[in-house]
Every structure is written in structure tokens, then in C-alpha cells.
Image 1 (cartoon, rainbow, N blue to C red):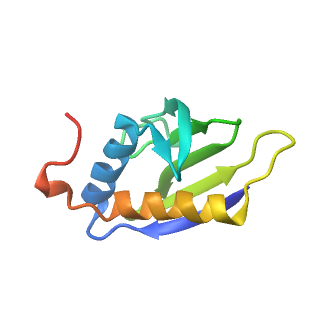
Image 2 (image 1 turned 90 degrees about the vertical axis):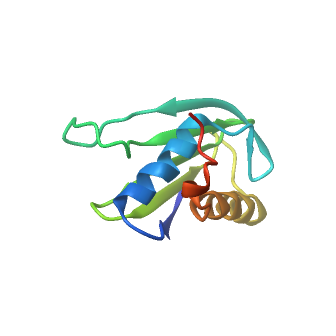
Length: 114
């Protein structure tokens, strides 16, 4: 498993917008088809924060999990391979590029799902 940290421009509210986008779902991430999305809208203390974890289960059994890193506006991304599989450096690079593009969207422009 590999983890990456992305700083979200702005504050925790901007992170909440980013997490909302991830919860709305994407059909592919890093060019890999998303088979399922699992969301958890609570933090470790069991309190809903709007920044709960989102896991994308990818074709082939790999997964990408996104969650708030600490109490600030950073996003932690963990990419895990399917049992017996591996994530290539190219796959990881494409997944991170897609996530970075999503994180840098200007949410005030109305791109979020509602």
C-alpha cells in the first residue's frame, strides 16, 4: 500500500467540497474502471464531519481510499493492490494525477454534484 498527501487550497470547507466530489463518484480513476464506492461520513470519534473516508474499489480488485489527513485541509490518499496483485508506478502516477486534478477544481464554480 502506498499513501500520498495532497494539500487542498483553502480551508477545511474546501476539503469538504473535494470529499463531496469523491462521494458523488467517478466511473474511472487513473484510467481504471471504478466497480464500487464505499463511503463513511464519520471520523474516528464517530462524529459526522463531511470529510469521512471514501474508498473506490477498482477493476481488478485494487482500491483507492481518500480521507482527511489530521484536522487540517490536507487529503490523504492510500492506494492498495488486489490480493496477489500490484500497482505499477504508472498506475499510481495516473491515479494521483486524477485526484490532484479533482482536488484543484474550483468548487465555487458549481461543478459539485447535488
